[in-house]
Length: 265
Image (tube, rainbow, N blue to C red; front, side, top):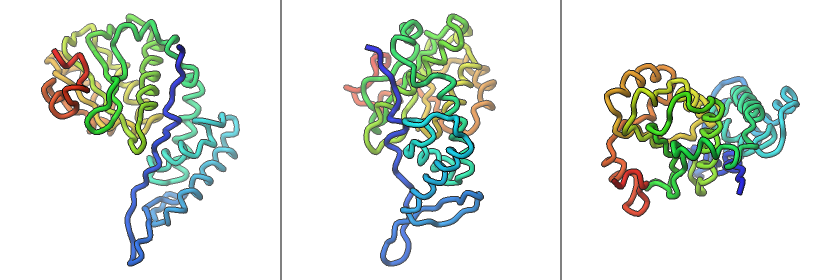
């Protein structure tokens, strides 16, 4: 059955960093005003900031769609406010681009049937189990990705579809996913710096702070030049990358029952 995906548009992302003040333990969190200045605002004021972003989007970007993942989606607005440290202007700027990208890319129209030809390679899929930290797991088998075999847009659609699918599996209270890149068998024909850059770019611009960690598993020597080329293009996401072994994946991220089949050999 064709399956339309998105995690109820950043659904479980209502957790706000909290600190306590004075003897009555009033809940507060640090935010930035729309002018970019910092300040301490009562947690109830978060809704005021959401409404401020919504009003600015309606006024300046009335052509953008509404509804789920649209300019009036308050959950999505709150997530981007958090990403932009509660700067209203910065959230409006980044969110408007994200909504426009979703519209142009056709994210809401992505289905299993649309990506089935590329998906059958098995080069990317969402694991059926969560990891030990309760995070959905997006798996990439690089040896099954042959650069140029499919049109770039087809690979990109599969990528976005799988991200949406992983986000749709977020349990209550969980905000991020784990990505595992299996580099065993990686060769020159699998090298694709443009696609790797696309992957990290969409997380940075359109799915901010949704990646908890990226595991590069058993990277061969031939991967090192590719990594050196890609590394400067990955921005702050470089800090999320961990090079590790299959044994590390087995011991630190899964139980015997939940371990992905590709790591049971």
